[in-house]
Image 1 (cartoon, rainbow, N blue to C red):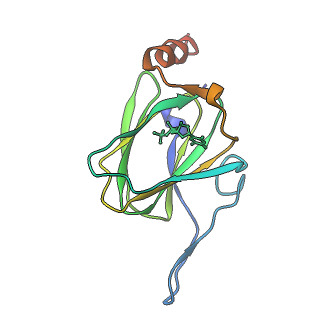
Image 2 (cartoon, rainbow, N blue to C red; image 1 turned 135 degrees about the vertical axis):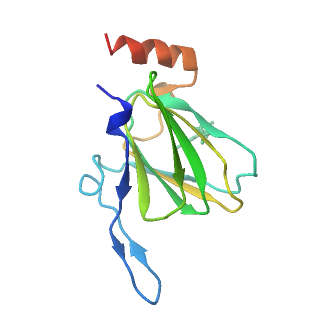
Length: 139
Ligand code: TYD
């Protein structure tokens, strides 16, 4: 069962160096899935919201590569707000988790590592439909 407790901030490896720090991520080693796709949002105007959907099967890791933003996760019963502002912390998001992003700082870049290729069928874009299915799995 996918609940909010499964989602967590992952402290990624960080090689500190006076020439600039380095962080790396290996699928199935630092995160609990193999990486099939990477996407990122950028040039996000201040005050805008993104996300507002859930995935049926996809796992993801979200990182603020630059700047900061908030991610609100909701498993249908409990909600939690995370503030992402470091490129060496990733937020692991399991399937069946409604998410929306807000509070973007200017120049922020949100990188997402995903466990599957893009598939419109894997999305819940309707909150009521998501709630219905999420709560069904708790019974
Ligand atoms: P969407 O997932 O709604 O973005 P966000 O959750 O950040 O608001 O995606 C926006 C559009 O981009 C939508 O038409 C689907 C398309 N898209 C792809 O074609 N491939 C992808 O890998 C992603 C993430 C989105």
